[in-house]
Length: 488
Image (cartoon, rainbow, N blue to C red; front, top):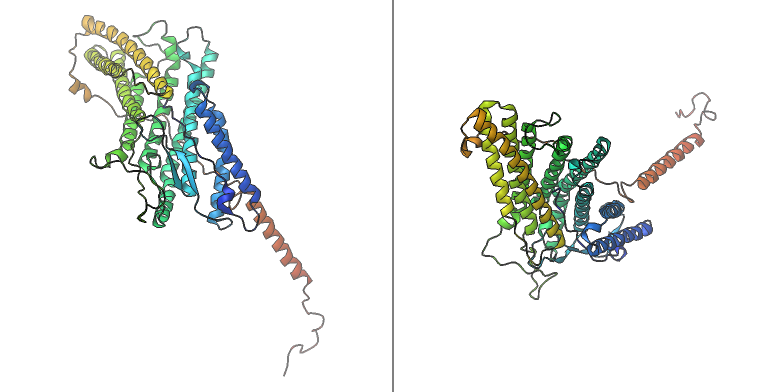
């Protein structure tokens, strides 16, 4: 397993010229360029939707969004600085891919304001970056267990793995920016349009808790890959002789355990956050029906979709919490067996027995799935089953080795689980969020061209003042007589 695979949204067509008024004709070409970039994004998302999972081009989507988002910021800054005005409140149509739906088909909803467009575009950008990281990892295969791989090839693939870690840290920073900055502005705009009688639904995609949860999810996925990179050399050296003793190149098992514990904590925090919208609704309340504008009675339409986060995301987080707790216990057992001496023989066996049981429970919890499961869900499920089976085999190998040593050399009692619980240390972070730098607008206030033009205007104004000062006579020649300008 590498990282969560997001379903990408699709969106309706938009012409910014229909909503924007450029009274000075300064930004006519820029508005047209923004509309074209938006159309390119819509086309790329539709194409991705029709493409088989293994052939999707996430890098192309990232590049399309890299082109569009600065132009969208150009529109936003120009409107907020009254350089461009609005004919009417624009309404944008997006599929909410984080929403739960019984038919596994993301609902499409219409939501007003440019803030909505910026958030959905930014979310799509973060989804694409996350999926690109997953595609990079998938292309590597299980290279660290290939017996014929050279040291140079392994290091080259380690670098690609590190690139995927960087992408996920970038995605974490983008989710954090959306949750803390963009959604705060959207809340203000939502209050404004609702007061005007417009409907403004709030799907899970526009929940601050959910988006901050996605940031923690991306960071946990990044840490998961960082652990794999840390262990790649030792994994290669252990291919022929798995189990104890560990190769000399192996990092500290206690360190690996702490890294897994932090992974579990991040996934657990993310799971709590994404469950918040569903937990806040009363179970007795029916789901609200979506409608837009005003109803026949003239009252504003309901603005809550009543939806929860998609179940496959919640399952992924729950499974990752269980998996990383099990792996932390595995490596705590290995640490006790490798470095604890005879006195820790029972502790080693205890942790490994606990880890094996957790992994077997996780394996038995994997059902065959439903008939309506998407290819994306089936792929994630199959990869998890393979990962869990691999870890069960590895844990069993260590357990057999350390149990034999305890039964023949150490003769230590295996502590109960309650006692082992008290030996678990705190987690440790190996990665960090990469802050998202707000893009420079492609045009309008704050853009490079706008700043250059303002600078030139100031320089021209300064030169005109200098010319006027030089041409104005100081009157010294005509008023040099005694008593000049002294009138008695």
